[in-house]
Image (cartoon, rainbow, N blue to C red; front, side, top):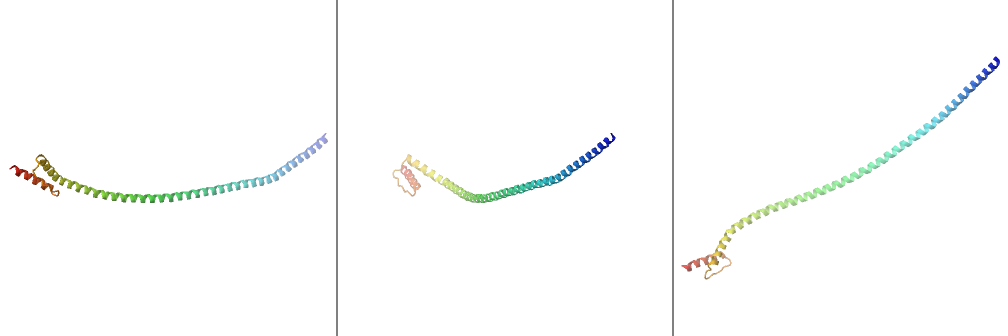
Length: 168
C-alpha cells in the first residue's frame, strides 16, 4: 500500500506539474493574447481619439466659417446703417435750413402785418370822417353836387359848405 501511495503521490505530483504547466501555458497565451489585445485596444483607442480630434477640427472649421459669414453680414449691416445715418442727417440738415427760411419769412410777414394794421388804423379815421359826411349829405342832400373822383372828401366838404350857405 505504501507503494501504491507512493505511485499515487508521484502521479499526483505529475498531475500537479501538468496542471501548473497548463496554467502557465494559459497564462503565457493570455499574456501574449493580452499584449496583442492591448495593442489592438490601443490602436482602436487612438483611432477613436483621431476621429474625435478630426471631428473637433471639422466642427471648429465649420464654426469659424459660420462666424466669418456672420461677421461679414454684420459689416454689411453696419455699412448700410452708416449710409442710412448719413442720408438721414442730410435730410435733417435740409429740413433745418427750410425751417430757418420759413422762420425768416414769418418774421418778415409779421412786420408787414404790423405795418398794414398801423396803416389801416390811420385810414380808419379818414374813412370814419368820409362816412359821417356821406351820412349828413344823405339826410340833407345839397342842391348841386360837383363830384371830383380824386378828392371825394373835398367834394363832400364843399357840398356841406354850400348847404350851410344856402340856408343863411
